Image 1 (cartoon, one colour):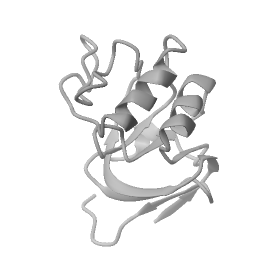
Image 2: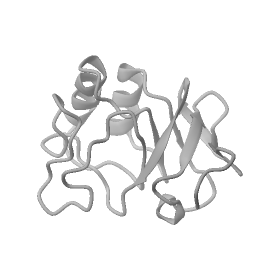
Image 3: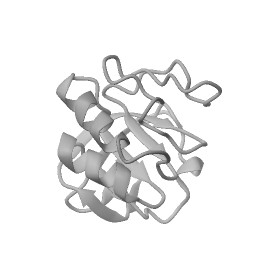
Image 4: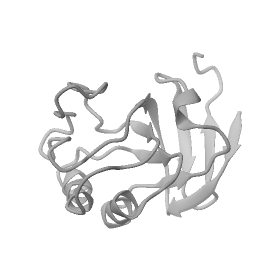
Length: 136
């Protein structure tokens, strides 16, 4: 299955899909040294986003969140790729600085996607591809 959207940050990456029903704040919400979501009460609290394809509606919080995404990349704990319902500047800048492929506007709310499925994100073409034989 292929969803076609808008390419935001160039590159192509594959990984397990991790869907958040709530926006993510990278400043104080994700530990840049470990990739673990530390925001109290967040649905992904305690989950590690390192190497995952994370899908969430949009970011929230301070512009410093862009630098946290960059730090995650430099520390080897960045997500493999990002899928947003609608991209906004904090996440876009962080994805570009960190070399993290990113897309948005795939035609369905990201909350309708299923965590645990292996996907590929192509930031050049704006495509999200479910891999063959993936559960779900």
